[in-house]
Image (tube, rainbow, N blue to C red; front, side, top):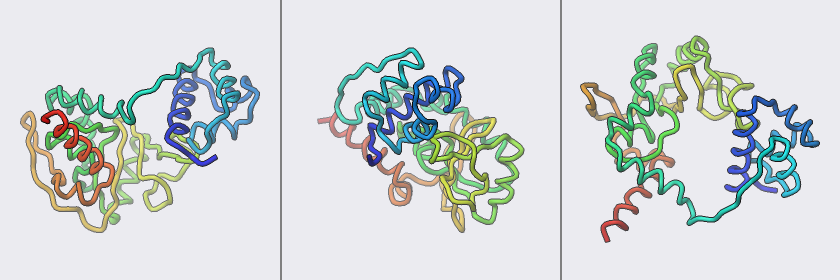
Length: 234
């Protein structure tokens, strides 16, 4: 069965419940009576489980699924509304952004994506520090990751680890580190930036107008935010 948004949500639920119980995929599979490959495909969002398999996996962890409905992407709208009601300084502190940036001194980079949008006042969800990084700096970046317990996102298994750290290797440019998660946009030259200031600190960020053209994920969230503003004003 092809991957769907629901398959991804169910995979996230199963993985989170498994991690909270400190179970490996093999241990969960053994208790639920399915193969480890089945658990891996479900957690990775590559396969939507049947109702029977889903119930067996949840029962093996002594939980059950409660089903409800809501307007499409209502959870995302709720996140945007919550962020809009919070001061930007609070949003920055919640990300631990400065702590991570203070340690990224081994190579030049600029802030891009949703992180750059947030620093310019847009209340968009941020799940990782997003930076633009030159290909020529990929080796010092890899060394930095090795020093700071970096693990690369493994889309096949739906978790960090088990793939090469190097950006040159195929895979998502997303890493977990001891200081937080980093998503990189690899480029030949760093994009033009503007400087923004918060709490006595300056940040070099890609401007909103450029994000709307070059960063699809940030552009979609910015569009959604603007649409909500227009709906609330009308």
